Length: 172
Image (tube, rainbow, N blue to C red; front, side):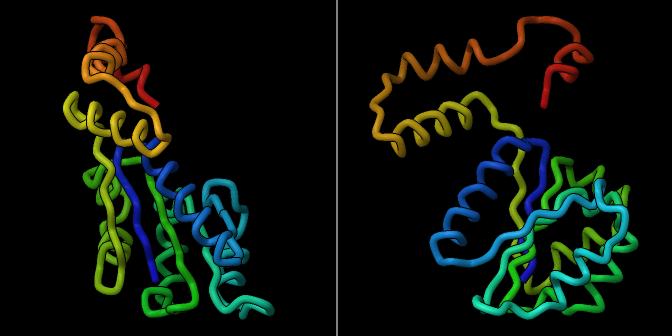
């Protein structure tokens, strides 16, 4: 199964991946992380997808920067039938917008958002969305927070004035 997480909000993507890893580790599922920008050869990804687990039937592979090596990743995904493999969860994540990803590789985008995949987009939060997100995280942690405090926190979370270029430079 392919799980594709993408969008400009890299923080929430990584947070979601961390939650998925906790669930996998609690279920004694082995987790592997590969960065296609760092791999000299795609052999490691190919081997992980082809190998059978000795002690666990399931495994999770987290793949970052798949679009940096799109041609290779497409070939590996097509040859290994990952989309229909129920023993492997391949989590592909990119901290980029749909527009940028389809410019890099429309074919890979179509594969990772196609049938038998789960896709979730992480847009940057608006003020209202950020306030709701902060309240939800506080509630999960068992913290009660006043609405006024959340409003002030959200108002102070933005970089002061400045040009669009300066604001973009401050984004993760």
